[in-house]
Length: 350
Image (tube, rainbow, N blue to C red; front, side, top):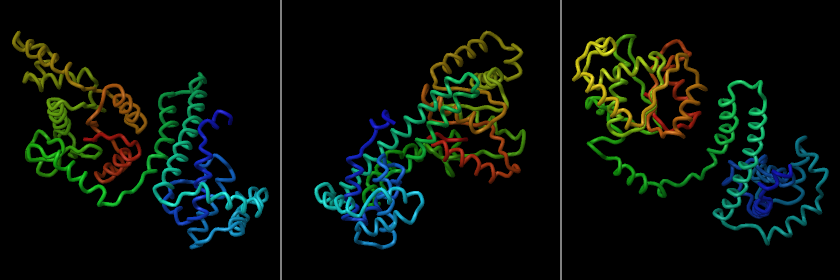
């Protein structure tokens, strides 16, 4: 516990309690701040009690109604037994000197406490990661470590201020203007007719659906090459073709040499020159192809995170995603959507 004290912000915690004693309604501006985010146990329980009083419509906080709330719950009764009305009166007497009287100042205190709580939680998870790494019997270490850390980061990702629309509309319109290119917003597809309905937007999900052997993979290959020509960083997760077979397919696409002729060697010196030129061009692109015959969310996630952090990533192509539902397109969309939401990876699934 001594190491975790380095991440405590007890002064800010006390400032929050003092502020809420005077302005219990300020608790509605910190609903993402939970009692477990407090380091000091007394502050944790008093904060929970004042929030409950505020939700009940109480406008005046005093030692008696705080003690009444603390005594109701088995989780806080122990603190109620330790505290006294006199000690709470002392707290209220000193609150005048440290309380904040504006929402903006109060939010600064909340931000300090949340940051400290995140650091403590990350520290604990890093210790767990250390145990996983030191245990030779542990399997799939990379996935376990990623999950341990990401669970903390995800839990704090929703702790953000919610601005009024008047505060964001100008920036949003400026962003809209900046994305207006070629008559489309976002990254247009290779096929103009498709751009009339959708374009590639960061953080969004786009699905190509068709029966077997109807050209889905060729469509995705065309999209991948066009994105590479636009200098986008692309990761292609493939459940059908290993990287050797995919290389033959993309080289055939780039050179115009028939696939069967390319894999069998039935091409002339000019064909070889075109192949080498295509290989040289591919080496200048930010492109990764990974063969994963059996998809699962964790394997996809591990691959995406590694490429994202080591090579950069703008667009993720999955060819093709085998859903666990009944094969219905809506089920697949929902499953992929949950994957995108849960992983917070700002790329696009095609």
